Image: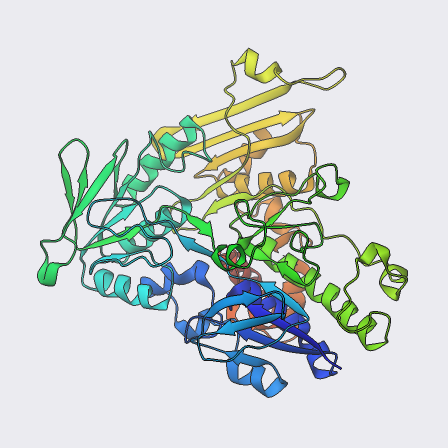
Length: 538
């Protein structure tokens, strides 16, 4: 009997899980049902802003083909919501009147945008009703609203100084819109970047045509436009910022309402252990932005580096790939009679080939790297950057016997929009900030992710962006990770190009590189161009 797997949610992470489960579906080991609220199959939400400024197409964002999945045997339910989960009967009750049963249930419900509590907005997180001219830029319909404003050269107000808001603002300004970013802080990306880097970043935004309203606390919106549409954002000092479209970019929150409704434990997200299983419920799992990895046992060694949702697509994909392997092995054991129907087992307690095959633990995620993807403005931030070079108390605090103290190397050229800061301990990066230094940023990110030591002379890294370093060493390493979201190396991309891929889309189809945040598209193009230039010269 096939293992019945129901996936709630059909976003990028769910799409990867289903793709990895297809071999089990084809072999009859598993029967997979996926339930998605939208009428469209999974697409790349991270690049919805690019769609909203006309730089890509909806088909290019697609991550799943519903018709193809149905042909493979997957039960795809689009435009359908889950009303509730009946854990006693192991069923999900849907709005279409059906109640599919499950042996394993996977929550991949993702996150929803935060709607600020402003006069004129409905802040109800479960059913936000946004007035005309206000969008959270979350789905394909939101992208159409932005595209109309940008193509008409309208005034766009972006509320929020996070990376997605900044990328939207920069892209909209370059495509002809008049853009203002409003944020409550001294500089954008206040939770990620230090004061010096933030000041250079803000100056860079202005040089790209984006107005920045800092230390601005919003209180409400006006509806004086046509048909009661948005016309202005009101601030607490009595001033107003006029606009034709308000883009809310105030962060996201995990969607946990279904899990709470059926009695599962939740924190920031749905609480799961390091095998992605819900607390005290062996049949239910959660992955992606809705999952918070934290074992019920606080002393669990495997969970010592685990945490809440990262908000990044790469970690969610890695969870999906791991869970697909786990569920497939469970289905194999069930089919072989090792796990009787209706009986769940912990991997550590079974005598099955799961242990014999030594299924690896879910890999611990490396600290996230925040990268601003925009033409004309490059920025990378990672780790802890709060300390300043002369903060003796901060630099020495927390040191233990025999552990080296932290050191700060900092360089700024505000006139040309360039700034670098490196926080190290024992020569190894604990934090980095790079603005306007793309090659230095690429090398620092590589060093940070690998945990390698920096050169003793830090200025060697700054020289990577010098005029004599157009072919930087960081970009010549074929084994470097080009696509961090999908974990694809330059070697794998080069191999795909040598086997006939001549566009970014073709490389993405062959390797999955470039299907996440899109920040590696220029690097993929460079690999393709170098290959064909070499071929033409031969």
